[in-house]
Amino acid sequence: MNIESITALLSFALVSSITPGPNNIMLMSSGTNFGFKRSLPHMLGINLGFTFMLILIGIGLSQIFNLYPVIQTILKFVGVAYLIYLSYKIARSSSVQVKGDNQARPLTFFQAALFQWVNPKAWTMATAAVTLYAPTSSYRNVAIVAISFSAMNFPAICTWTLLGKQIRKKLDNPRFLLIFNYIMALLLLSSLYFIIM
Image (cartoon, rainbow, N blue to C red):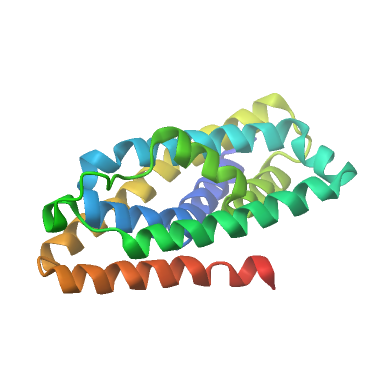
């Protein structure tokens, strides 16, 4: 892969990682409700889970889906159901400081990593990246794509979490926090439109 291709790949990785999607909406909500430090496992789960998924797609998982499209259909329905569940959880979440709810917590590393497998934006990004930048599925090119996405993705998701943390400063009123969480839940639900349509 030449320098022009790598530059294009890095640009693609940054733009696709920083644009709104289920991960970024959930991270902004997590940053608002739990802060940056408590959201770190969630961020690492997204970054490493997506990187692992991208590698598997790069070495041939997409061929299995072409042979057995029912697997992709099942993942689609699981993804829709899980996004609805997460939207509900976001709408019902409140900061520990607001209500003293000790049950409230951000997604764990494993929950965030597993979520990538039902996240429609993650599938689209990974498939497009492999198709455009590692079409021969050579291990070297797949590794370059995976490293590039991991390097660009982490600052992007940190940005969304920090944005949420900054918003938290403006939401000291529990009512405003509740409204914010409802808006985040609706935005997450709206991402289903592109899956269902």
